[in-house]
Length: 235
Image (tube, rainbow, N blue to C red; front, side):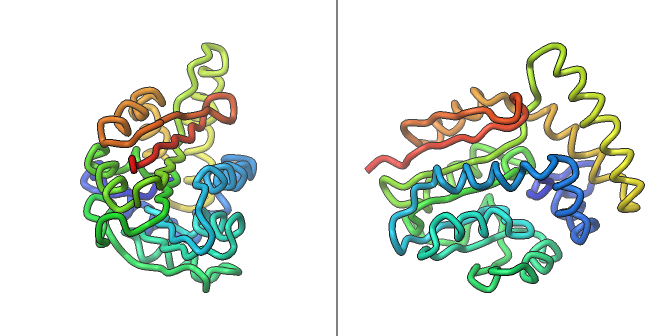
């Protein structure tokens, strides 16, 4: 949930991830009560990958999104790309990870030719990149005409009462508990700040449309704390 390329307090999110690579998965499960795996399954389903297609998981981290794609579409090829090799090292140890094509790379400068993938999927990446429009433009560039770009993101809830409870839990209790458990406080202080200052779902939709994607839509999950965005490259 922390990966990306943006600088914050002189330390990039990818560097913060590297510090907690071995803690990332268990603490993510604890924070989301395990629902993060279900959210990735929803994103994988929305990718609508053709038989024997090829998908890029941008900001793959420990590979959970890539594995969700393979679970949903067993015959496809999945490239999992991330800036943090430490995160991918953890991911490579997971069952089924041998079927992922792992590589290090920057989401703002994707090292692939145009129209190379049938779909591009990212989970918890956009709010961490330094330039969202450029990241979306790159994702559109490398997806084939008719292919989908799917972005899964955390978002700050708007319902007044729940918003207050969420702030106490997500920005107060969790950073304290996770920092104590992992011995690294900075990544868990960064996480709620990055979510709170990130764009609202309709703003992400507008950015995807400006990047040239069509039929852009989103749906919110988990009482408005998660949004999954979908857009298509025109034929």
